[in-house]
Each structure stands twice: as structure tokens, then as C-alpha cells.
Image 1 (cartoon, rainbow, N blue to C red):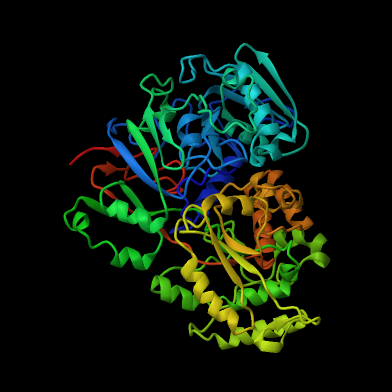
Image 2 (image 1 turned 120 degrees about the horizontal axis):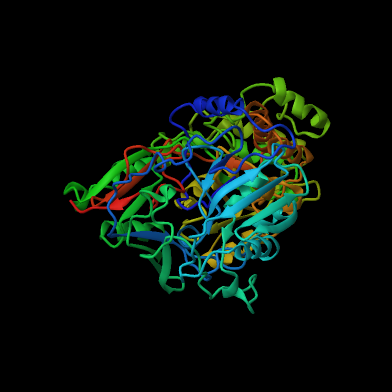
Length: 623
């Protein structure tokens, strides 16, 4: 499962994640219904075993039930937005619209990797094979206009999202055989194929009001504010400039234990600026209340301004326990120039991470070593062994070197010239048919130059986490020139950038993909062959690797944490050794500067500063 990447910063674990899955393994050994037997309706649903929180729990473990209500928080966003519909592919919606306004049948506890608890539903039931899931709605559930949330609304929402919504909703919907109303407040979803995560995914689908959309084309409507059942209502918006949300005083769910200590601000506002530098100046000037700093060097040198010295701005470092994800330069293998893994390895060898890290981060940030690095899901060093090797063995003949034998990113001596790795890169390029020819330019056998475009969004922003990758690219260009490669760099505005990356109209671009401790069906949306042909998908690199799809299938049907972990580690090997992305760095902590009136609980969730943390459990209380 995955959530919206609301906070954008990629991070990694400060502590080992072994206890997370050790606990899950213990839970998996608890009593479970026999095959074919239906479990009794419950308050929650876990991928393995039982939910950690018992029925009747008082609040989520990282929420403060005594947090005061009131006040406001103002955020700064880079770029723009041109749609008020966050559920479709067309346009870009503002921050918060999905998270604050709409609710799902179930909600995530961000203190558990693979567990949901009832929210709009009062109970959930399934069988041991997860061949179906049945939900019973809470009778008190209401949309923001006071109308009840009905089974009809739920079924319409699921069908509409699955057929007309953003592609991220459609993959799981293809595995649904039947949705039927089974009672006044209950519905049953039967699945057409084995996939243990589907029951949880259905619990996370947003529920919208059917009546609001009658007579409208859901897939193309961008100017209608969705009516949801969530804690906030969008009360003011100016396209591309700002959105303002107000807490609904009549919110039906304000007294639910799941929401105890959540959604404490009366007002949440998101203002949009030209780039990250302008946002930081707005923060220094008191126009916004929170700044997330992703550059360790800037954290040490850019916060000597009056509000910090006077204590009106607090600097906080929040640890988190999530995979690093992937963040760096992605190569589009749909383009012939990047189709050969040897070329992609040469591009990686030319990327002098150690020198770049020293120049931009004072050498403090660790490199991303794989897609799930800094978690127990990460591929292990050296050759594949045990169950991982068994899973990969049937595909050995078709896998690129390094998947089974072991692969590690190249390391330089930290000097700018990076001579050893440059020689290795040139040898690989020559092996792939490229040599330095006329004018010192790398050319193929026909004399055509090795040319490509690096596509960037002006000012960095959302797509980059939110730092501007231009300084990284500038250093990289110098390194490539020593190989006779002279790429064109194109920086375009947000709207053009989104249009091009959604249609895969680029050679190389900066890629950010946050990953969780509970990867599932969304992995097909990122790495499958069908996603490679689906505009707007996460498969920017265009990979079509049957072994990757087989590993995703193994993940989805794993019956215990050990099998699940082996499948993810095998997938991690395929992705990393595929040399699709040249990884940059991640941060071991989230660095957050905020006004002193904002507070959060001392008890942090497993994922730290991520979806589910801010503004969810924060509150306003003036000193």
C-alpha cells in the first residue's frame, strides 16, 4: 500500500526495522480462520495476523488526545495547480484536497506497516484466502453537507475511480469480479484473482458523494470542489495561488477514537510560490509557518535570522523508520540511447556522488543504495541466497548482470576528476558501440553523436523533494563532458513538465518515488510492462521485466512476513541492478523549522514526518 506523498521528503531509518517484521511474524502465528472460513466482523484488518490495537482503543498511539483545537497553519508549495479534482489524471490538484476533504472506509495507523482500522465502516470481514471483503458502514457517517454516506455512494465511488479515475486506482479495480450491496449498510467486494492486499486496498479508496457528480464527466471535470466526509472543507481557492481549508464544526467523525487527537487546526492554508528559494524567503518573512530543509549544509548555515535567534522559530529533527525510496536521475529506456544496460551503468559511473555530496551537503548525507535501502526489505549485499535466489532462478537467463550475482553502486575517490570510474565508463560505452570521434564527441559507428536531453522543472519543487536538482546536474554535466557527452538541459514550467513526464516525453529527468514498509499493488503501477505503456504511471523508466512482475505477484500472495520480505528483496535487486535511476541521497532525519506556536507529540509514528503526521497530529498553542 502506499499513501499520497504529501510531505515529499524522502528519508530513511535511524533504527533497525527488525522488530517491525518480527512483530508481524508473531502476529501471523495467531489463530486465523481455516481456509474458506469467514472471519467474524472486526474493527481492523492486518496483512498478517491481527491488528496491534484492540477493539475499543482510545486513540492512535502517536496522537495526543489532549491537543487543543484551534489556530491555523500556513504551508508554502512550489509550482502551481490547475484542478480541483485530485482523483483523475488530468491537471494538478492542490495539496490537501484528497487528505483533508475525503475519507475512506478504513484509515491507516502509521505506527504499523500493514494494518487498517475502521473509519467510515464500523466493521470489516473477509476469509482466510482474502477472496472477498465485506464492509458495514457506520450509521452516523455523513458528508460535509449533512447527507448520509450510503452503500450506493461507496459502490459508485469505487466503480467510478476504477474506470474513470487516475490510473493508480485502476490496477486493483481490474481484479474485482463483483461489488454488491448485502444489506442496508453493507457491501461485499469479490475478487477475480488471488491477491491478499486487495481487501486492504478497497478499504483505502476515497468515498465521494454520488449525487454531486450526476450529469458531469468525472474524468474531465476539474472545476468542481468534491464533497467529502472528511474533517475539512475547501472554503477558498484561487487557481495556481492558494487554497484555504476550514475544519468542519459538524464533522461526523470528530468523536471517533481513531480521530482522537487528530485534525486540530481550525484552518489550513497552502500558498503557492515560484520556487523553493521564494518559499524559504516567505518563511523567513513570517508568511508561512513551516519549512522542511532537505539540504544538511543549508540546515547549518541558513537559519541565523532574527526569528530563530529570538526563539520564534524552532528547528526540529524528526527521525523516521521508512525505506529511502529512490531519488535521482531516471533514464528513459524507451529511448534507444538508454536501452543498453551498459550505457546506463556508464552514466552511473560518471555520476561522482562522493564529490557532489561534499560540494552540496558537506559530505553529510548517505547515498541511496537501493530502492528499499535502510529497511529490512532492502536487498542484501553479495549474491542472492536462500528464498531470494529461489524466486529469481527461473528468470536467470534474462536478467541483467548483478541481479543474482550482486550489484553495488560505484564509489569514487571523492576527487572531481573521478578518473578510475571515468575509465570504466568509457570501456563500457566502447563495448556498447560508442567511441570518441570528431570534435571530441562520443559517437556511434555511423558517426551519430551520443545526445540526449535532461528535463527539469524550473525551481525544483514538488517533483524533486523539494530541492532544486540544477546544482547536481551542473556538476554531472562537467563529468559527462570528459566522456565526450554534452547533453541539453531544458528547464520548463510546472504545467509543461507534468505534461511531458506523464506522456514519457523525456530522455532523462529527475525522479522521486517514495516507498513504504508495506509495498503492494502500487508496485505494478510503478514497474510493470503495462504501466510502461500507461500515461501518467510511475514507470518513467519504461522497464518491461517479467521477473519484476513475478516478484510483485509473490509479494501480493505471500502468506507470512518471511516470504513477503524475500519477494521485496528480490524485486529490489531487479530494480537496482537494472540501472534505471542514478541515485542521489536521502536524509536520516526530517529537518523541520516551524513557528513556536506549532507543536507535535513526543511519541512519533513509525514513518516519522510523512503522511499521517503533519498536519494530522499537530496543533496550535501560542506560548
